[in-house]
Length: 518
Ligand SMILES: [Zn+2]
Image (cartoon, rainbow, N blue to C red; front, side, top):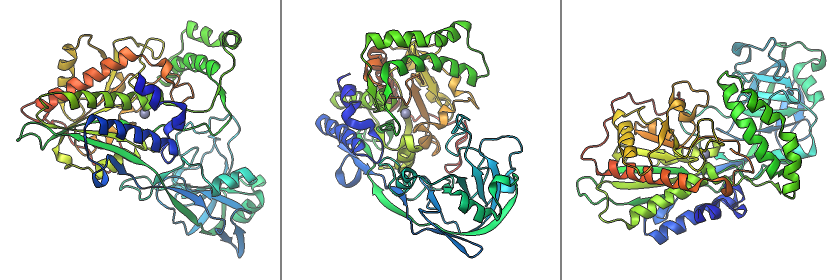
């Protein structure tokens, strides 16, 4: 609890990769490891493995030429390419896509492939972002240009990206290509299309444009924290049980501050309903009534508390809980005698929230051979799981994901060890089903180990209404519950580290560079 109140304090500013808060929080972990006497396994004898990330800013020297006319960056258009590889767009054909998010008569992928898709922005409230990072209807287009006036704010954000808007300098093999998003003025859109877009029809071909996009890249701080506790058995100490969590979170709100108490109450009621709807089920009349009654509760909440505005997403559960629990486990092993037979590898990953970038880097640049790692145990969000947090929750609630996806034996070990705990968990395996809509198996760092054929177990008390909100704060953590998760993960690690054989991999290994499929 003490560690979490420090790690998820406002002074960490939401621990977003690329920001000062991320540096402070990783320094905290490294200082603790130093104090506990773990062996550094990062760069140059330190606990830090630096991960080369960059911020990519739009340069106003960019131009687009079309039919002998030159459109000027910053005046006629702006471009962003926040993630993925540096874009190398040359000459592209323009196609008109109507209005984003309008599903009637949407263009087919072969109408879009390799083209510059020119479209009006989605209607307000049309569920922007509902389909993930790609947004609406990119469908293989080389770039998307939105027809909109260029505001001074948009220009400033493109030329001076937020501190936390970072991506890997060199994208990893198999990573999806970087997406370029442009904003073009209505006049520039007319030049690109050759006619007035206001009267164009969806699918209409435009001109051929030559893009000369210039981006300036600056390095951004990002680091994994890596430590080892050497094993005691001369024959087995060259093998490792890896344990992980992620040290980063999603930073401060880019928009206006929010009232903590109203938000917490609303999100809690909404979360249970959202989960049902994603599974094609209906909320119960009681759940709906609770949500409907909330405006009444808001009035009483505001009387009970002065309005508490907040803009820092502290990530107490995500993944402060996993990070400090991993420190507790490291402390327990560091002070134990005798040591486990196999060695232990601890990694606090950066950039999880940016698309598992830190764990991807860590597993491509491991301090020990990949095939010496016999299992990886990952914790992300292990501090909630009560009945009011998640449907089916209780003090014994714990989700396991991936535990038998490579090694049946490893999944069995977790079950056996759980039975020996003072208060065994009731494991919820429903999120481990193939094709589950939450896609948890692909959504945290363990997957980057699993892709190398390393058996993994993902431990989590699950999503909840405060997920990625300013209300994910230490006051809502169930500390005894979190401590028991830590005990279980410790005991599983100890059991695996002392086995006379490594857990048998009896399932097919994935292609390490393929897209994760749950
Ligand atoms: Zn997380």
